Amino acid sequence: GITYMAPDLQKYYEEQFSMMATQGWADLVEDFLKLKASINDVTLTTDTQDLFYRKGQLDILDLILKRKETAEQVYEELNNEENV
Image (tube, helix red, strand yellow):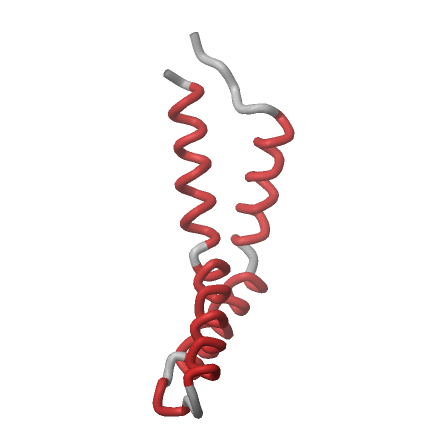
């Protein structure tokens, strides 16, 4: 039979998608993409410590920039698991 996602988990994802549908989220993503491009310019690095620092910054930016895609994938997987 068909089962349904736990209500608190369903609400969590609904809130995530609601937030990511706003103009504010789109603006944040645009700003972060510009920031990523500037951080990603290795010609500006001063030493290996700076290079590793920039890599850490890029890792965090990618987590945020891929948040919507990741949430959509997990949500779909949860729905597929529960509808088997």
